[in-house]
Image (cartoon, rainbow, N blue to C red; front, top):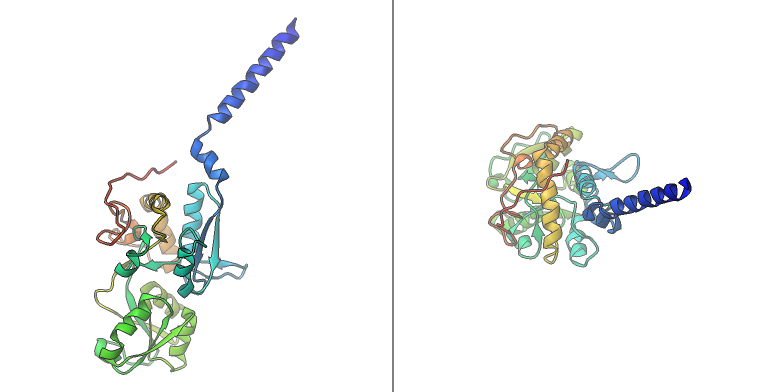
Length: 291
């Protein structure tokens, strides 16, 4: 007589387990069924992304977006390629977004969707040690400037080439652009401030020099125009990482300085995207930060 009762109890327990499993958070189950996120970086853009001795790439961008994917419950595949080919590959559907630090310009924002910035970037020149410091644009007149292809740095030199009689030397990688300065082929290298400072810290003959006034931009994450839902989801995760100090800690680890409260690593901007840029969504929201 006791066996039927035992069987009934076991059957009831099994049913309860099945019901509990079925009631697991729908988002978690969906995340497990989703394919890995796909993104790409310029793997020569230290300290944002550069080769690791253990293989693959390392850097600020790698740590940042692996954590973004972890919090989304997704795997992530990060490819390394020349920056000049990344945006075309994104638009062709090869990637879901770019993990590379991408300067938000109006031209780009008219064709892509961006998250809010997680870093500020400013355009800065690097010169060979012993070269007279750059004090103004006039000091650049008639000089050759090296840049990484497909970047705002190349655009700045192109726009000002006739006015200042500049010669553009564009390279597929940032290290090649720095080498052009060290070898005397270029007078200066123009790049982002974090990259110039990092190069100077690793290369004694390369010096971080003049910052172009009025060139502060958001470094943010670009998506295709049809990816607003994913853009918003990734932005909320980045906002949570700002609120709990994760972005600031990664910044300090890779760039050497603890960011101030007024730096982009610590600022949660209103809406989705970069304010005052095309593609900005002013809808108020509160990021859903899990425990």
